[in-house]
Image (cartoon, rainbow, N blue to C red; front, side, top):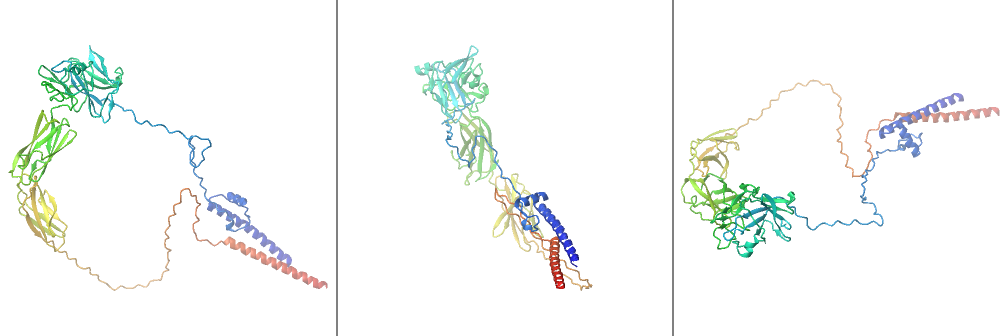
Length: 568
């Protein structure tokens, strides 16, 4: 009996050990699958952590998290990390000195030769002078600048500007022949910036150049005046000594198109009678109208007239005369704005204007130089004055329908017709639209409500005709109620079907954003834990082993006791 029980116990024990070993392998493989590692890696972690391989508790399995290495910045030579300590005996870098002012860069055309009195004056042929003009916003030093001329067909140095000289921004610099001005043989009434006897301007081979430094270096060239032959502008007769002036758009100084002859006298002696020029003043150029236009062709009282005049220079005084358009006009009532070479003249016609309608009314535009002296140039444009409104729209008709009112009328015959205005009554008439057609549809209406309309015609001057009136009542739309007919339904026997309740779809919450630099492992998803049958069977086997061992020891004890009694 005992031998049989003993065999059963051995079999159960061996079976339990085999099952426990297999179950431990399954658990290890499951942990490896969840953590992304291999079975061997899990076993190595267990050994390192001192976990007994025979223990079957999942709590003993290590939790393996994804480890993200901290980003490291590339090493840059010569740059010390912010958190590192400065080495001892280190020396702070000395700040670099910043210059208080940067050198002025001068480009060709920044300073130009603006005027040449190449013929002298009535008192001396040596009464010659050169005028520079600074076109920049900066003062420019002229120390060491050189001026050359053409002599015997070759370029030669005329003079070098001494140290300490400069030309202010947007100003002029005058260099005159020293013998004439200092000796009193000059018609100039203004002191030159420099007088030098070397100033010599040819009447037949005129070409003057200025250099920012040594003239032997062509890269120092700043400007050129003249083509090397006869002067490009100016007059030299016994009764006329007129200088050669640069145009406001200076252009290439070797071309005749960029020069003109002076036509006014500024800064000359009172005794001067035949000289014209503008030393150290704005050049005198005959005003030339390039374009004159108005914002409209037809005007009425109360309209604003806007005239745009484009001229060849921006230093003129420009006016316009509106007296033929408005009897209330007086000189100076208009406003003038100068934007470069474009002048905008604005004037509003008086509502009390008594002039009758007229076509081709002349508006004269005048331009003269800055100091209001000759030359003066006139231009003009013609407009119409129209204070007569167009005819009233005739044969106004109306058609109504579901949600709309349709208006139509006959065309007006006025030649200056522009458009029709449509008005509609509310608490008061208000304009709801305009059209150039003879029809209009209003869709902002309610059925059964009466609306009142007015139609007017408007001409190009803005005159509006008297009104044409009409009313309209769009129809009320009656919508029949919906009739629902219910019929008896035959109830068919039905077999009760099992109702399968669906679990509500759970919304997946978005994972919270991790703080920068924080590394976290993957959070275990909450899943339904399946029944662990291997564990249950293992426990059952263990219980059976214990029971049979207890039973074995109990039987053994019984048999031993029986044998003892028999011996006695």
